[in-house]
Amino acid sequence: MNGRPTAEELQRVYLDNAASTPLDPQVRERMLRWLGSDTGYANPGSRHAPGREAAAELERARAEVAALLGAAPEEIVWTSGATEANNLAILGAARASGGRRGRRVITVRTEHKSVLAPCRQLAREGFDVVELPVAADGLPDLEQLAEALREPTCLVSMAAVNNETGVRLPWQEAAALVKAQGALLHVDAVQAAGRLPLDVAAGADLMSVSAHKLYGPKGIGALYVRRQPRVRLQPLLHGGGQESGLRPGTVAVHQVAGMGEACRLARLELATEPPRLAALRDRLWRGLEALGGVRRNGRTDGVAHILNVAFIGVHGEALAAQLPRLAASASSACTSAQGEMSHVLRAMGVPEQLAHASLRLSLGRFSTEQDVDLAVEWIGAAIRRLRAFSPVWRAWQAGVPEEILYGGGASGAA
Amino acid sequence: MVEGQAVLLEPELPPRVQALFAQPRHAGRPRTGRFQHGTGGMVKSGNLLEIWIAVRDQEITDARFEAFGCPSTIACGEWLCAWLPGRTVGAAERLTGLELAEALELEPVKRSVALVAEDALKAALAAPAQDIDDDAEDRKYGA
Image (cartoon, rainbow over all chains, first blue to last red; front, top):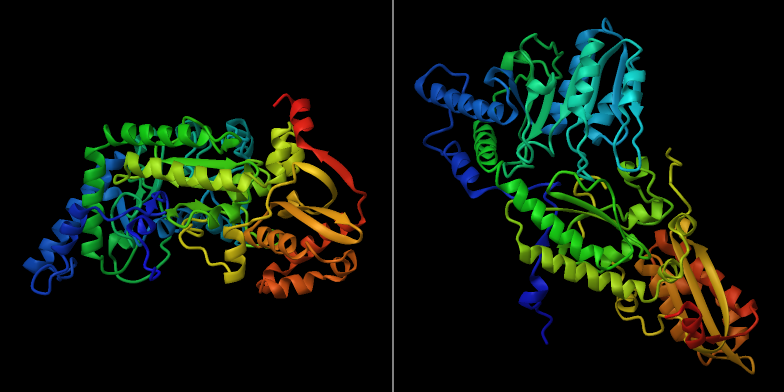
């Protein structure tokens, strides 16, 4: 017994593909072509042959990103990732409108922080920001959107898929309302690109995507900016004229090449991979549901790769401490007094302690049935062990309803 | 649930908390016997600890706990229930949350957990003894 961990103890399962995905080996190969010390290093803005070769790679990659979104290549702008794409879309569109189309900006409470934070920045700049509430299933009410649109509005931002729950938001239906009021629609498609068929023609004026959520590298994303009629954006950065002046700076050719290849691979498997992941997710759900006292946060018709579940009767932190070999996302933050609860689950009215006892398990291209079965086994063992001496579980089993046990929704959400 | 904020790999716990949390020997309510029962904390604020103590001639003879809470809460319950048997009621009454926190080497941010444990113990010491018969309970619930 020398304390060296056994192979079994070292075995890990990665079910956090909504946070980031592994780099696909084919993507890495494509990137390496542009990381040589003898070739592939030229500035794509240079007019000599190596520069033109690099520029050609950018255009190939641009066409691949565009193809995944149903866009034209010239409508794709490279960014450093989805955070920059969301900021450029939201700050850029609102500031460029100068309030002429109205000073209202509408978004949804469950949006990613990289959407909510620029909206709150716009509020500081004098825009009138409305965050639409969601129902317990995570969906906003389009009638409330129509109501909010009665004020002259410059921009609406709504994700295609929620990153925590996998809930698909009705952006296509929203688009008709947004168009009718002459506002622009930005769609954060980070969790949808390569996971669902997407077509900007359904009414998006701006759409954000990220490479590292679809087996590409971190540090690169893209923003679709509609050309006809042209959507005007105020750039965030000022410098050279790259990317039509919208995003100055020498483009990172290796990153872009990787994103292009990642989008190509994702498009090729768009018909086969979602059903495979849905089968894995359903296997995961069946395994966890069998434990009893398990709630699904979100809807059953969500995107295939995300499952968000709450476990009654256990504390989130104790659960996390029992799962040292499972990589997943949780909001089981530190003490209850300072614990930062998921703003998404809060908006859905999930009680705070049940939100803390929630796990987001997200599958990916390299996830297997064995991963799913191990996760079910580990989570099941942890849950059974903690419930064995949980007074909350004992009360729940004796018939005390969740609202009484957990004290109702944290935000009192409608 | 910020992206990747709380990946579950290797969360770090203070060594004493880890040891007690990993193998609580006094967890689970007693099935039969005469016990005084006390509760500390509440679910909504993040931890709930219940303690059962058996007292004979001013001496604690047995102690059990149940907990909904973080590893430190469970470790506090276990430490208390291992410490109590053989002590007098007077010694148990003199135990403070601070001493408990020091015994477990709790991080400052977790000190409040020891106060919840102190509350549960004080409540149990003040409670009347009652007979527990889970077999009868099971019959009642039809289990």
